[in-house]
Image (cartoon, helix red, strand yellow):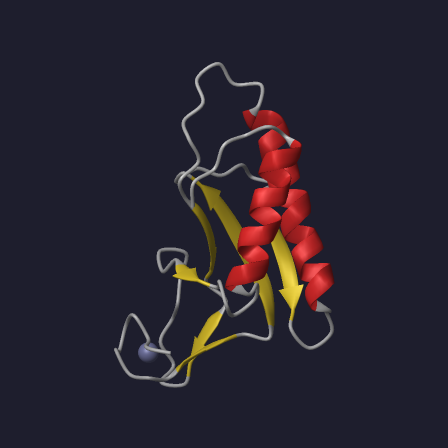
Length: 122
Ligand SMILES: [Zn+2]
């Protein structure tokens, strides 16, 4: 992957870290989960994503004004550049297809939205 700092093809996701979930550009302090690609099964990671979305949607349902959910982003800054660049919080790099496959991401999001009667259009 390309590093956002040195622009070399030297960026790799760390084998373990934290994924932040942002929904329509917003997130709660609890909207994150850990991953470990060496020891977690995909179902375990998907289930953590499901828990985060469930918690968020339960809260979202109680709001008076609800926008259609058009964006759910999964990002992390647990990336390592072999050139030694410091990836920080400001570098929100998507981990869809790295931590959660696109198809699983869509399925889980749709499933949780349906369970909470929330409309999403990703
Ligand atoms: Zn770099």
